[in-house]
Amino acid sequence: MVLMLKLLVFGPSGSMGTLISRLALQDEEIKIVAACDVKNIGEKLADVIGSSDPNNIIITDSTDLDKIIKETQPDVAVDFTVAEATEANSIICVENGISCIIGTTGLSEEFLIKFKTKVEENNVPAVLSSNMATGVNVYFKMISIISKYLQDWDIEIIEAHHHRKVDSPSGTALTLGEIISEAINCDFDEVAKFGRDKGPNKREIGAKNEIGVHSIRAGDIVGDHIVLYAGSGERIEFKHQAHSRDCFATGAIKAIKFIVNQTEPKIFEMRDVLSLR
Image 1: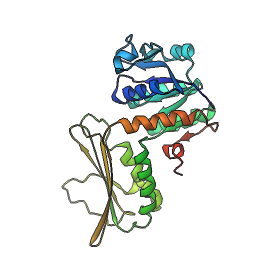
Image 2: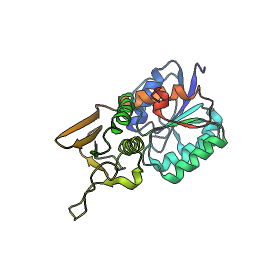
Image 3: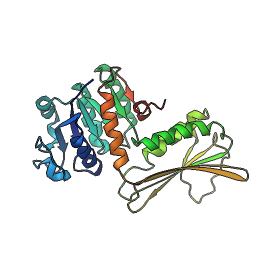
Image 4: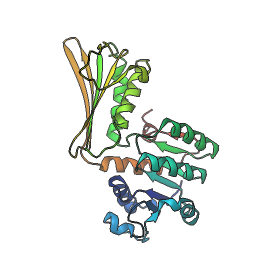
């Protein structure tokens, strides 16, 4: 077991990067050895995130990633930035034998295929999850159980996030769709209906024919997800609300500690981290 793992943080200036950095600095098992960003370069990490840092880490330019890795030799990299940056940086990390914890959403299918190949080729495990909150992953488990009993009902997924969120629908909503589809033995890509316009589109009854996915972007909503099951004369709603981003950061720390003890070269999910299989 690694007692003091060395961590590289991407995007410490961002909302999630800041929270993860603060928690990591407070954790006796983690040592931040590098922090890479595209802004606040040359500034002290402690000043940017508003927390003490005994190692006086200076934020470095992420375009110098190969050099930074050679100088600091991190065990794990954590990335909750944006898809374009994550897709480039995580490949470099894995090629250098560094495990990745990825919470970025909106990643391309092309990248996911390439990343899986790189993980296997370089014998480096990783964790990739659309949502690292403990409650959400328990929610996923519940949805996988209940959906199989309600496949003849209409099932709708409704998600709401702050107006700054770039991708839509959320990665968590897409994960919910995949979980539901797996439970009822259908292909999510074939049955997903993303929003509905006012045109004459025919409504297909039952989840095996259609699963609606709807997005709301407003204010400072951290993250709400509802799965609505509607039958004849009754309905069930399962809802998860994130009150702050702390739950995602706490999950990321769990994933960081989990991955350093894994030897199988594969991409793990948070349900693996939390033993929810």
